[in-house]
Each structure stands twice: as C-alpha cells, then as structure tokens.
Image 1 (cartoon, one colour):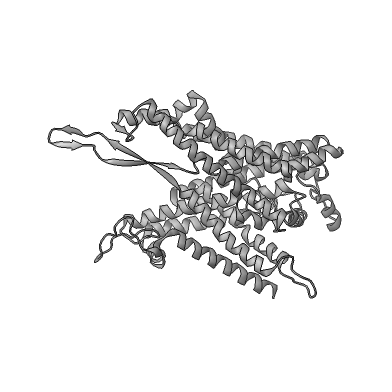
Image 2 (image 1 turned 90 degrees about the horizontal axis):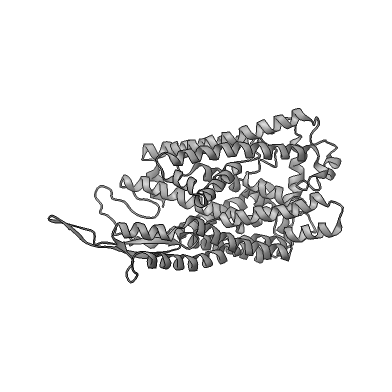
Length: 499
C-alpha cells in the first residue's frame, strides 16, 4: 500500500493528473464559500446549524445542503451544485431507453455527444427554474416549506434574510446560480479530461465528504458532556460499538457494490486456413446492485413532493400537516420509501438491461451460454438471472437507505452524522472511491508498478499470478485501515478543538 502511494509520484503523468484534480477541488471548495449577492448568509448559516441538528425544520434543505457540500447553507454561488446536470443526464438516459429515436441517435457515430449537448441545454433550464424558486423562498421565508423556523432565527439575530427583495434580486440570483452550476460542469469536464476519476462524481463526493467534520462535531457535542455536571446522552461503549458498526456498514456496501454473478460464455471454434479462432471461455458479469444509487434518488425525489405540496396548499390545516409529517418521517414514509426503492430498482434494470439485444449479439458472434440454447432461451435465462439479482440488490438498497433515518430517530444521532451510516451519500462515496482507485491502478500497472490491489512487474521481479495476491493487498483490509485513520484523526482534531 505504501509502495503504491510512492509509485504514484514516480509517474509524471499520473502525478500531474492528481495535482490538477486537487487544484480543481480547492477551486470548488472556495466557490462553496462565496455568498450570493443580496443574501444575508449569516442568517441562513445559523438556521442550518439548528436544522441539521434536528432535521425537523428543514429536511429537504438539509438533504440538498449535504450534496452541495454546505454551499446551500452558505447561500453560495454553487448552491444548486451539480445536481441539475445529474437530473438532466438521468432524464435523457431514461428517455433514450424508452424513445426509439433517441436510442438510435445514441448508437450512431457522434450521437452520444449530441445527447450530452441536449443534457446541457436542459441543465440551463433546470437551473433557471430552481434559481427562481430559490429566490422566492429567500424573499418570503415565512411561506416557504423548505425554510420552516428561519423566521425565529431572523428574529433572534435581528437581521433580514434578503434586505432588498424584488425583481433585481431574483434576476441576480438566477444568473449567479446558473453560472455557478455551469462552472461546476466545466470543472467536472476538466477533471475527467485532465485529472483522475470522473469529474462529476468527484464533485458530488467531495461535497458529501466536506460535511463529515460537521457531522463528527455534532456527534461529539451530542454524546460527550461539555459542561460540568451534564451527562452524555449515550453510553461511551455504545459510541464505540457505533464506530465499529460504521466500519461494518462500509465493508458491506463495498462488498455488495463489487458483487457480481459471472455468466460463462463459450465461443465456437472457427478454422480459417491454418489458424483456429474462438473456442475460449469468457464471462459476462451481472452486478447485484445493477441500478446503483438511482432507485434511492428517484424515491427521495418523489417522496419530497407530496409533503411539500400539502404544506404549501394547506398551511393552516392540521390534518394536512400531520399527513405531511407522516410522509416525511413516519411509518408511512418508511413503507412508501421501501416500496419505491423496489419499484425503481426493477424499473431501472428493465430500461437499461437489454437481454434480447445481448442474446442477439452473442448469437451473431458465435457465443453461447453452456446448457442454454442461443436466441430467445438465452434472453429468458439472462432476464431470470438479473431479476433474482435485482431482488437481492433492492433489499440491500432499502436497508441502506432507511438505516440513517432509523439511527437519527432511534438513537438520537445527529442527522448529518447519520447520513454517513448509509443512504445515497455512502453509496456515492464508495462507488466513486473504488472507481478512482481503479483508474490509478490502471496507470500504475501500465507502467509495471505495484498498485493498490495487484502487483505489476518491475526490473528484477516477476509477474504476480493473477488472483494470488497476498492478504495484505486485499482492498477491504485497506478500507478498514483508511476508516480507522479517518476516525482517529477526526477524534484528535475534535479533542484539540474543545481544549
């Protein structure tokens, strides 16, 4: 592991890519601290401190603040984050699967670039719409369902959230927010082309990780007595067990993210002259969590609307308010949340996994699954196998998605800290970190250097037998080490801070 980090700096190209990526991340974090003109960011910041602690007054806002890396809490120019672009890309990806014309365009030469251009146009439209409604919420915080309780914060601080509301403020907010999102898109493209990893995914991951210190600090203030005579709200032993449980959850997420079923594919032998082609056996990997984080994102997006609409349409109705609260955090919320995750898991697989096309391609190439006839039987076999895998993946996603809310409500864990025990954030972090490690690994192995997971060939040494790496090179072991170092470092910083 140490040699792999050392080898990174021995490769000039890889070193330049990593340094460029770090520089772009610094630029992104600076932009997340620059406040939008015309907004008193201190009021919003103080309100978010209480909202993230209780989660009862700003559930939607705290969720978006998590994915923007705290930019929304500062009302920064990056308040919308990269999510409008993600939404546009997902929208077009689904439309490509259900609209034949778009599907044909995606398979044509240069068609993918056109679809990406369409996604950027849609992103601009989404930014304008979201920026406008954000400006309205900032101008009228008392009537906004996303900023409940901020009026009390304004009264305590004796400050106005927007000192000079009006058309000028709305236009300025829309322009600033749209420009911020477009700049983040450009940063993501630059990281993808000139850095390491997927730029868009890294932007989201860095934003989520930026909230980790705040989550640790909230957990410290909640569980550790800071005033003489007070008692902690949780037993220290339970806190240690929760840290161990966090490591277990991360390991489980990594295992399921990497889990796959290998379908054996054999190719018929073809004799052309004196050469024999084909005859080898390959494998088709079917991932257990094929849908990734998409079902959770879809379920969260849909569940937000009913409670928001009820609060906006019937602000004084007690029954509507109770129903909105049940949809936001009650047993009805958990039931609908789990059902929607199951539904969207199968929906995503149905739109993205094409067993008929795969079976036809195998038949044209002379490939077949042992014991299964080519053509329609192969498609049915793949569909049945993916259906069973999707069920296991949906169960896992449901458990991971509900776990943070159970810890928050059942064990009084602060909302921001609870999000790192599961949910969308943890799945995104694990997926992006693994993908980035694979890219770094590829650069190292191409130049015959030892990587994180496997060994390359250097002068005076031999190739390692594939699949026979020693136990110390297991990625899971190093995940445990990294998490332990992170927890120890965070605890040390918090202790020093409170001294």
